[in-house]
Amino acid sequence: MNRTVGWVEHRETHHGLMVNTAIIRPFRIKDIHDIMEIEGRAFPKSAYPKALILEYARAYPDGFLVLETGGEVAGYLIYDRRQGHILSMAVRPLHRRKGLGSVLFTHARNHARKRLWLEVRSKNTGAVQFYARLGMTVRGRVPNYYETDDALIMILEEESGAGARS
Ligand SMILES: CC(C)(COP(=O)(O)OP(=O)(O)OC[C@H]1O[C@@H](n2cnc3c(N)ncnc32)[C@H](O)[C@@H]1OP(=O)(O)O)[C@@H](O)C(=O)NCCC(=O)NCCS
Image 1 (cartoon, helix red, strand yellow):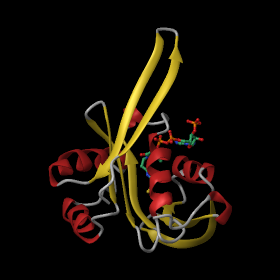
Image 2 (image 1 turned 90 degrees about the horizontal axis):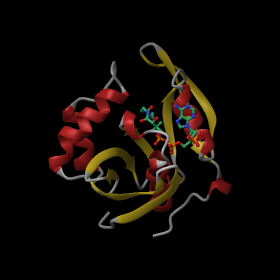
Image 3 (image 1 turned 45 degrees about the vertical axis):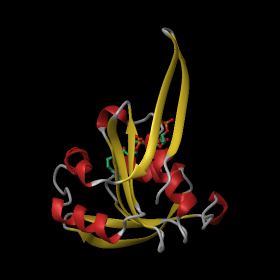
Image 4 (image 1 turned 30 degrees about the vertical axis):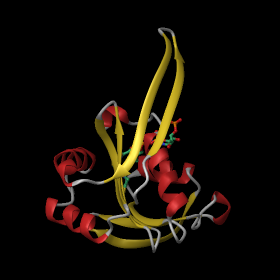
């Protein structure tokens, strides 16, 4: 992935017009500290180890997306672009519910060669609702996939605009 995608949000507030800009770009090795911090905040008990994140960066160089806003790494998404498999995604707590996760997901959707799909903890109701809002549906459940929880298999429905476009 050699593209940089610009994204601008304008929002009216009582202070006036607020403008946020964000870019999506490929992971660079210097991002690793930020990614590990975001990962640790998002998954306090089950964060991926640094070695695995670096292995994903090596294996999926065009599928490791970093979202920057205000000069800060605010979120990331890792996916296997050829198989459409989302491996991980997270947004910094302070930046959540501003649409950034949706921007990352939509970018992956538009560049995946197959329909997006993923496993998610059944108890992670916030993420399940987030993915459902983006057009994914639950197609299966793998009991005890995570030590203390089942995995739900979610897939992006056809009409949600999946598929290769590049
Ligand atoms: C899941 C996650 C990536 C969503 O990122 P985000 O930037 O907050 O998502 P968005 O702002 O684009 O949310 C879009 C919509 O999804 C839904 N949504 C998002 N987070 C939600 C939550 N915690 N509870 C319920 N619905 C949620 C809402 O409908 C939201 O729209 P709204 O804010 O207008 O109500 C983020 O909450 C996160 O990092 N969570 C921890 C890590 C994680 O669970 N990752 C996914 C498992 S792999």
